[in-house]
Image (cartoon, rainbow, N blue to C red; front, side):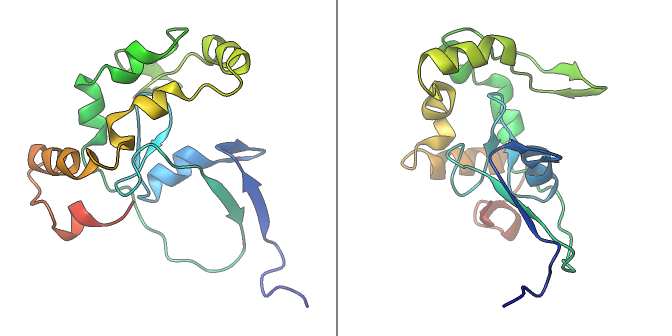
Length: 157
């Protein structure tokens, strides 16, 4: 049986071929870019693995919906201190004309390879802990002036 949208193509992983998944996920409101270079979702924290599909199917566009992870990362140093090679910057940097969190992958990738898949930064990120996430989300919502439980602060990322 032929699929309804024949031009669909799957992309596993955070960056596959021509489709960069983290910028697309942030732009569509699935989460925010964390200091560790991974997506932080409202519902799952940093414990998210992305995959993408390109298609010619008509879709309704959504937009980025900040919930406070970026501001939280500004003051949190957990992943920065936990990173074995020190690849995670404490401050945002200019990257291709945009100020954003920066991970030095020339330092990260060798450690990742040596440790057979590091991910210490993601495991140690406070947003990854399900027991801590509700309080963390409430704190972030208060800092943004949102009421915890409002549509914009409780929507799954």
